[in-house]
Image (tube, rainbow over all chains, first blue to last red; front, side):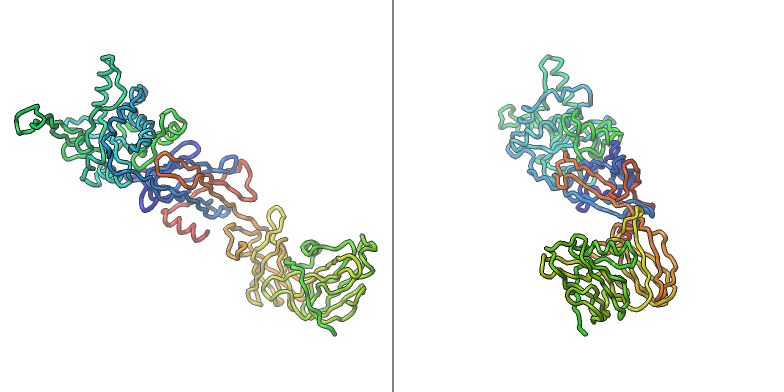
Length: 298
Length: 283
């Protein structure tokens, strides 16, 4: 079997190919982090068939698979292809200024699940809520990220960004270090997992159960590098000084580094999920999600 | 002498004079009417030889078939030597045209009578007119004994390289100069004339045969067809939402494929590109 060598490049759609034993058969990740489609052997089952599942990613294009049976009694090469169409989307994450309110309104107990990490809870929650957000024109793209700060601690996050393929490219290029130019605050925000965890825990401790994300989400750049938060301005009458009151907030990533795409505690090939890859369906207990999760962790 | 124009019945079987081949060719020709029967004494003649057909009432003849028949609905091209008149039981024609060309396939054509004065009916025997020379003939059959059509068979010898295609019943016929030839099937052609993707090997790969004018050479081959694969993707159009799936089914659609017969589908060793190039070339 010969699936495409390219994965999400040169007009080739991205995707993961799993066999009937639910094992990932293509692509493989190379040492430089890139993905390479790879050929593999397969044996027909008792029905004379080989069954595979392509989990389509987020890069549009054509996906072609070839197969032939080698040897003197073998069969000549045959091919088939699927066309993966681009999904358009707006290029500004919060054009009307009301995304955050909708995110908060869409909060539910998915965020409070105990069986998996909070970062995964957020991804699942976004997966569930995205359809609802789309109904009001606010669907979001999202991906797991993490960064190592100056103290060596690993900080998890989930970046949400405008669902435009170009913006996705800009976000993921920044995350894999291809570019140092961070997406603008109009394009990408971060749900910080550490802060969210504290907020949810506080709510639970005080009996005021919270089921939604933070009231303020930093841009991806601010999340990574930190900033000085403007507390008040003179014209707000809170202070008399002309100098704005700024409070420094540390970034989640050490200076000279950049946030990285991926799940904290990724198992097996989970780093092929999200981003340009396929997304786990929501809820995580759904057959589709279980199957894909099983494939990448087998 | 009268020149007779041959009206063919569109028969495409390649000839051999064997009984099985004749029966097949007759079946292809539409067979015989219940009203009349035509038998051709020698179904394959060489150019310039005479060909004789005899006619008689069929086993299902009734008065509605009419009192007699006429010759000529379809006949060999040539000159009438004897008979061939209305109701004649014999028709002999000296052939002046072949039913194919040297080095290509030779077709069985119809030698027919038709009802006269009754129901409209016709009955045909079959014949072929081949060039003067020696014959190499045989069958290309599957391992199950079924004729495989469009197998190109090639004979190399004193007359050069002569090739022809097998017919739907697997028969082939090559007319060659007398001598010893190396006879070998070379490949199976697809319906559009290109080399079929359903590649095959042959058993035996080749044989040596000596053909004379007096005695044709027989060379039969078994066609061992390769497996054929089919890939089905469903659906073939999806969105890059990250949530779509495509089911990929590769099936072995070979005629001999059996349930439980595990077949490894793969690429061979070497780099992907080199393997791909090889596959394309051989596909």
